[in-house]
Image 1 (cartoon, rainbow, N blue to C red):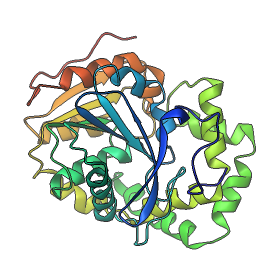
Image 2 (image 1 turned 135 degrees about the vertical axis):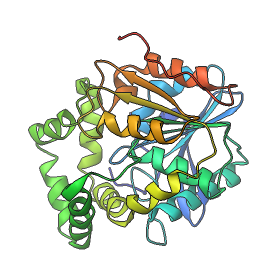
Image 3 (image 1 turned 90 degrees about the vertical axis):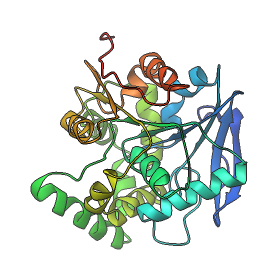
Image 4 (image 1 turned 60 degrees about the vertical axis):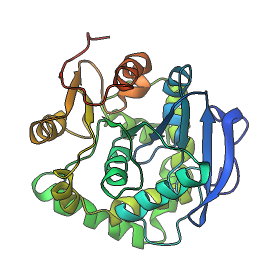
Length: 298
């Protein structure tokens, strides 16, 4: 499986809804399903549209769901420019224009939440609301905030690194360690999809490129200017992005809503798609959700 070289294989999740779309200078792998108002789903770091394989069909009962592999990862082609946050927002905006889509709601997981917010801030989209699932909306604290981007850049600049990561991903134990570090309990089938992605050097290279070119410190200052209602959803077992991050953002943005989910990790949308769908669908048609609540534990 090589990223950006055609459509997914026949056994890839929701492949029957896959299409190739040229926009912004790249060929995107896009999946669209359902009818109704548009919802855009943006996946997180290291993932692809497969991470929404259970959530998307639920939302598609009442909406048209649009999701795409981010530029340079999964089955989408590489961007022509450096994959900065501004560029990723611009490219997603170009894709929406090509599809003639105007999503009322944008849902982003982890780094996808950052892209969603930046799209709103830069007028590349004008959703009624944004749902952040375990959003990486703040820099890592202390030394990690300085070390991780620098390390990602060093790894990205080394042409051998993606192949080393891909080679290591052939070890089932190595993939299990990466996914266990999210705090989520995934099925063997779900783990296999990630393993297949991690074995692809192009996917690894694209992931490192995103991580090395983003400036979350600058993004944090812009976040305060967000006028689009923001719904923050975070699993309390999340080991990748601290749940406190969403609490902090909620405190800074008075119009935001906060849902803290007991027993779920960073990949909560894969662990409990029905619960996550309930929160998302509850946000549709509501311009400014004002009540912060935690749904019952599942």
